[in-house]
Image: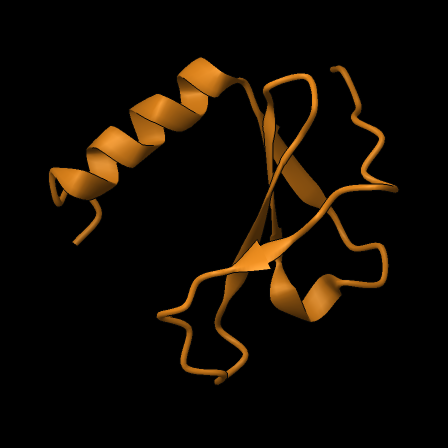
Length: 68
């Protein structure tokens, strides 16, 4: 498993988040990978890191309603 240095990552939370602590944040990394973490674990909790292809597939599934 490859790890990513997330020290300088710029995390973004969806503008649709309602603030009830059930949110995720994403960071688009300089090597074209995308990191995702639970917004409650900002201080060093785990993050999932996806390749750009994996992220595109995830976005496609979300757009198609596969996770409803």
